[in-house]
Structures are given as structure tokens and as C-alpha cells.
Image 1: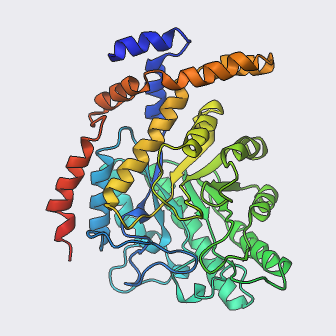
Image 2 (image 1 turned 90 degrees about the horizontal axis):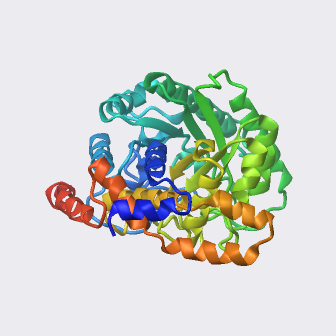
Image 3 (image 1 turned 60 degrees about the vertical axis):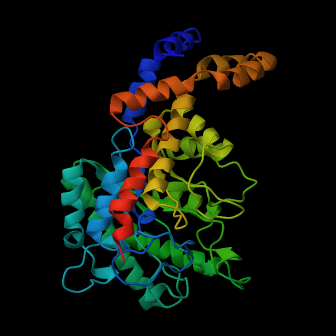
Length: 412
């Protein structure tokens, strides 16, 4: 079937494929830098620690800022549309000596801004509350030691300043997401105290002066982490309650809930509560293992909710790190899978299905929900890619494999 034939078929159910293609091109997904080097950063030669673990040893990971920027730029050329790049604070560029995290500033991220302007992307940001001597016990903003909390509060404030710098230089609001690994390996004797300290630390951070139109702070919850299996300070309930009181956004991560939960079902409640939804797209396998996202039921359900509730109400970012496969391929596959599921959702007549639900015409609704799954989405995706000048099928993989041979495998 040709694109024109698919266009006519969709038109019969009230779907304008031209509009879908244009709307998809407007959705900027924030691609996570940390897939490219296994969440290593450029402060030390050690790996990620403090509730973070990357598995695998595939050759060719980025070792320097220049290599990481080059890999990201290469990946973006195989992904249709214009997107964003999400940085962690540990990815600052240090010239003479490493600047500790409570002293970071725009200077360490000037090379990233220069690169972003050259490539034509916007930047988002994250404080790094892990892989640091003062996070060795996995207690940062909730640490019983006031001096440790003070260090991490200062880090949080510096990150707001860096995010404001990104927003000003790139003329686009910057989302700065706070995720802390704080928690306990075994059953705690005190659950309230750490949360009171966490709230106090966060209050001090968000009381700092920053441009609230340019900087969008979010707070991310988690079910558990490596070495933090029994208790996390920033649980879903704590984060949602704190965010409501503080007037910031709570962030949903698809990997941070029990695998029997439907994260997609939470989205409408978040939108109702906050007016906007910050969302990390990841894939757990039995636990928050951050696998590369696939076109599975979970991703499809999340994309459908995003489309039904207007993508402009969402801040969409990817979050996974797989060191067992080609890292550039992991980026390209994940980004394209997210786009494919968004496009599939755009090609469903949700308004008519909603009317059936309200009229309690459940038989018709069920039948059409299933039949629409077999409409010629592939032709519309191919047209979207053709207009963007990128391969629509697996042909992109050969380009990545050549890059692996010519560039990645030459890294010692």
C-alpha cells in the first residue's frame, strides 16, 4: 500500500495523516546523554554508584566530552524531527582540575552550549546525587549530617543556575530534574525523619532565586534502588505531596514502579493535579533495570495517553542505559520507538471512541479499538521519515555499524 492509499483509508475514519506527520515533527523528545558512556561522566574514571548500576561491556563507549558529543550528533542524524539533549551535572567539562559539584557553574557547561547551538538542539539538566564520595552511603539531601546536606543543597542551587544559563543561551525553557537515591538497604527504624530532612533540603534549594519562566524544576520518585531495596525517601507518595506543596512538577518514570502497575494509568491524574506532566520513558525487566525501550504494551499505553491529553502538556525524556549493545544504536532505536508509538496513537480517532465510551457502546468500542491496530501505520511512518531524510526501516543500522567500525572500535 502506498502512502496516498493509507492517507485515504485513514481519512475514512476521520484521521488527517498530514496533520499527524506535522504534529509528530513538533514533539521534541529529550535524549539522555548518559546512554553514551554508561552514566560515567567526566569527573572520575570510576563507574556509576549510589543506587545506579550499568551492566555490559560493549566496546566503544565515549571517554571524553568530544567523543560523547560526536556520538550524540551522529545518532540525531538518524532520528526524524528536532529534539533535545538531557545532561547530568557529572558531564561538566573540566579543563584544569575537576570542580566539585557544589561549585559547578555555567563555565563547565559552556562547551555543551556551544555544541548545542552548532547542532541545533536545546538542553535539559539533572543534578547528580550519586557517584560521589559524599553519596557513598546513598544519603544526600536527607543525610543526618548537616554538612553533607549543605553540600548537596549547594549542588542543587548551582544546578538551577546552570539550567537558567541553558534556557537563556538556547532561548528555550530548561527542565531540571531532581532524583536522589536516598534510602536504606534494610528496614529503617525511622521513616519520617529522612523525609523531613529531604523536604527541608529541597525547600532551601527551591527558595533560591531563579527565573521560574525559564527553569522548570521536577522531582522524581522511585520504588527502590540498588542497595536501597527496603526504603526510598523520595517515594511516589512523598514526591507527589511535596511537589504539590512546593508548586513544582512531580516526574513519572516508567521504571520506578512495581511491574504490575500501569504507569500510563497515572498520567491523567498527574495532568489533572499539576497541569503538566514530566515523564521519563524507560523499560523495567522485573525491576528498574533501564532496558532500551521497545514497542511494547506499556510504551503504547503511555504514548496513547500523551496523545489523547495533548503532547504540549508533556515534557518527554528517555532514561535508560544499556552497556551490552552498541550505545549509539540504543539511542536511535529508543527514540524512533517512542516516535512510532506516538504516531500510532495520533492515527486513532480518540474522540469518536470516547463518544462510544460515554454512550456505553462498549461492543463497538472494543471492536474498533482492535481493528484500528491493523491500519497501515507503516506507510505514514515511512512518509514521515522520507520527509525528514532518514531511513524508515532497519537500513539505519548499517550506518551505525559503519560508524562502529570507523569510530567506536578504534577507542582503546
